[in-house]
Image (tube, rainbow, N blue to C red):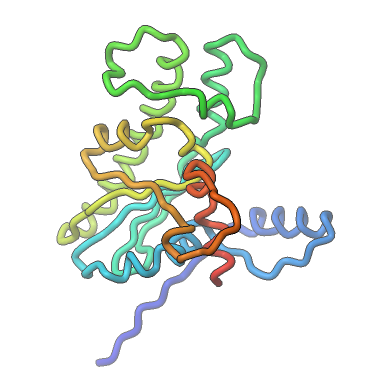
Length: 217
């Protein structure tokens, strides 16, 4: 019997309508709407297609107001979950601990380096930041465990990082220790062989993954 696997992507209407209305007010015509995990998967297509169907890779996109985790098997997203903690929550925790006014700028995160011996930190600001990261990491672990319980034959090889929250220094090392997984930043410029007229720092490139994936569509 010939069988076909179909990937169904669904989004709540109120979410898509809010995007459409925003672009309409800006005088822009919408060509494509797509969720982050599908766009990032397209950016990583060449790398992901080298995996067998027993090997999985997790993709973590830390955006401004939320984080999306997806697990890809054989180049196709098999699992996706939106977590309620994003880069803004990290900035807000830092601002409160440092008695600074609320800010939406990621500059604060760029100046912070996570200590790898965080259990012994004495900095109130770092402690506040780590509390938010701990909650995010717990959600990541719960999401991965939930998926692997349904697919016990799969091996999770590594986790790939993307998004605005990746400007936090040594975030990859922190997550590698907490998750016991190899961590790597997504570099869309290198992945798809983009030719650029300027040298784009990795901190900026790591935020471009979803955008490049949409362009490739």
